[in-house]
Amino acid sequence: MPTKSGTSSSSMHTASSFTSSWIGTSPSRQSPSRSSHTRNGSRTTPRRDAARRSTLDRDPFDSPARQMLLDFSQMLIRSDQEFNDRLDLDAAQHAKLHNEQIAKASLEHAKVREGAEREWQRLLLEQELARRKREEEQLKEVQRLEQEKAKKEAEALQRELEAKQREEEAARRVAEQQRKIHEAEARIKAQKEQEEAAQKQKLAQEAAAREAQQAAVAAEKARIQAVAQQKVTAQLQTPAAPSAPAPVAPTVAASTQAASQPVSAQVEELHAKYLDLHKRMKDFWKPFKKQCAVPGNPLKGPVGDMRRDIRKAIGQVTTKRDDSRAVIKKIRDVITAARNAGGPTLDIRPFLISQQLPQLSNEAEAQYPQLMLYAYICIEKQVLKQFEQEAANEDGRIISELGAIVASLLIDKNYVWREVPMTDLILAKMHRVCPILFGIRGNMSTAAGQARLGWINIAGAPPEVNSYNQRMLGLGAGFAALSLRHVPQPAVPMSEYWRAVAAISNTPAGDLFGGHFMVMKGLLRDNAKKFVNFYGVAAVALLRKATFTLPARAPPNTKDAANLVQVLPDVWKVSMGLSLA
Figure 1: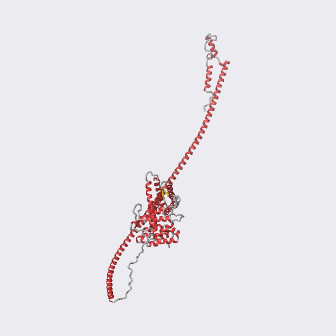
Figure 2 (figure 1 turned 180 degrees about the vertical axis):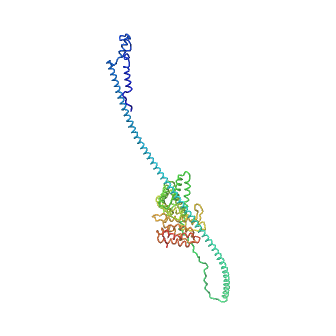
Figure 3 (figure 1 turned 90 degrees about the vertical axis):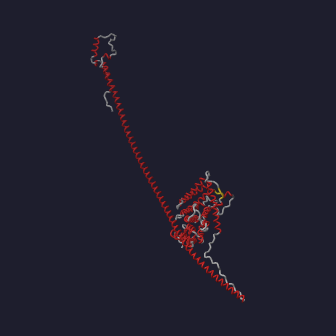
């Protein structure tokens, strides 16, 4: 704040100037006229000027006018001073107010600054907390991803180990089976050599016996002729009474082994019908697939996607029921899409041979979407292929799940034709690849006999013993999964399971081969307890015949395969608590 002074510079300047103008000057300078002339215009004389100067040199206060002038001057000075004092006071007040406002503004600014700093600190804290939270979340996410990765790696490793174990187990079984086959072949070879040696010895003995017999016969013939000649001579000499002829002994020996009973004509006729159906399916499937593969065909995409989706879905079946439900949903979606896709139709009646067909008012009612028929054929082909692949595992639950899935699809009312299920499609394929299930017999020494026993190409390659046995095992288990089901409307009647087991059990020993025992193992291995629950004592009797009587009369070259069936009762006793005693 400026220092207060008694007289401002302006007032001092005014006073000094006023005083100097009136006091410090001669009277002549304050006169209205500085002329040396007199009032009448005449110029004054020096004497008169000297008198005037002497008058002016006197005390100014001696004159009243001058005293008034001084008073007025003092009054002006005081007025100026008061005015300046007021100005100074106002300036001081303004300065004080300004300073107070500045101080208040500074205080407010300080408060705002403190608030801003606090807000800044709060924002920094929030940012820090958010950063820490993000880092924690990122850390948790990294840990979760690492855990998932570790879990997936562990699961992959477990699957790899399980796959490796399955491969090792399969290799071990194959090696064991090969060893058994080699041992059986060695035994058969040794037995054959022994039989050949015995046969040679027998032939030599028979030749010697024949030669001795021929000599004896010749001697006896000569003796008889001599006796007859003597009798004739005696009769000519003396008549004798007639005598009765001697009895003649049989010359043909009875066979030591009964001939095999032939397969009934009804079984052969039904088998031929299913083989014809399989041929019709093949004649439809291949051209339809080729036609849809032509560029520009609207069904090219749906057909390719459908085939891939079916193969993928069936390959995802596990022992978990939820997975099975998901697979059924996927396949049903595929069939529904095939039904809704439109496209050409055909008369479905030639593809249904086992059930009574309904009466139709016109031929149009017999039409069925070709794409749906193609989908069903793809399903049955993939399912049977999966049966064969899963046969390599000792756990048959996946085959059971596959059977349940395909059985539900075959009888689904949304896809059947006039309440007639599409079961004949899969049965036709089974008649083709596994005729043993239906009581068909053959001889493995001929190509036709091999085909009648399912010894056909597998995946385009000629069959081998191991692949053939695995196929028979898987198809037997798959047929059991389809038929041995206690449902109101089964896809395959349960009686078909009984018929298959009984047909193989009643096969004559001369018609038994390794495939019969592999099919029997597939039918019985995982289903004995269920079979007994359905049929009771009768099932126990049939199981005893299948596992005791049948292996006991197996030919020597099938003993190894027969042993796989013969040990099943011991396995059931341990794993299922089922005793056939």
